[in-house]
Amino acid sequence: MIIDIMLIGLFTIQHSVMARQGFKRWWARFVPPMVERSTYVLVTSLALMLLYWQWRPIPTLVWAAREPIAVAALDGIFWLGWFVLVASTFLLSHFEMFGLSQVFARLFGKAQPEPKFRAPLFYRRVRHPIQLGVLLAVWATPTMTVGHLLFSVVTTGYILVGIQLEERDLVQQFGDQYRNYRRQAAMLVPLPGRKFVDPKDVKL
Image 1 (cartoon, rainbow, N blue to C red):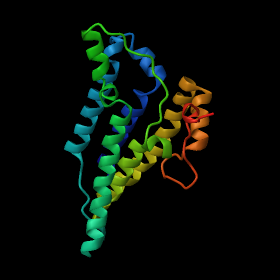
Image 2 (tube, one colour):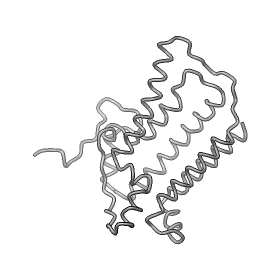
Image 3 (tube, helix red, strand yellow):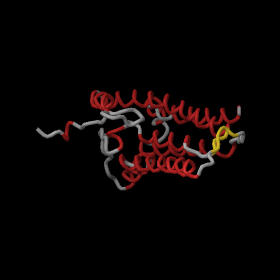
Image 4 (tube, helix red, strand yellow):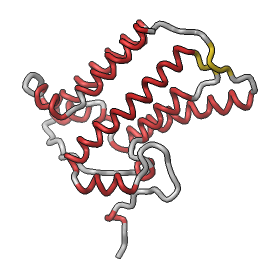
């Protein structure tokens, strides 16, 4: 268990520190700006690969669904989580998120546009649909072991802390525009009456 916690800790520290604006400014002294994002994704992928490679399973059962309906429901929620996660990356900019757009823009001599605040589809209901997808995927399982539970609990804690850090950066970047968005849209769980209304969509 200690090794598993250390592996998750290594990933969360890397993922959080490299995502902060202060680190990005420091890192830009050593790598060209157009590869900063792709480098971040590469290092994150290596940290994940290390976690998967060295993970120590703890097979003690916490729960095991037996009824076919329950198994199908949990499997459905699991795949729904992955769908929400992947779809949410495309709703913003999948290739920019993985650092490819920046590299291609440099290769073809195109200017990279300034970041603009957008809240399409899922983002109108929840501010962090990617993280929501992750939570659905890590918790929805017909067979929950102690090792899986450890991973799910630590991942959930990391997401909740990471959201606070990310939103602080987003407020600095977009100011009142993001503050207004945060007041209207729920953080992770879609709630009745919580939906972002873009002022540009309001007709006079």
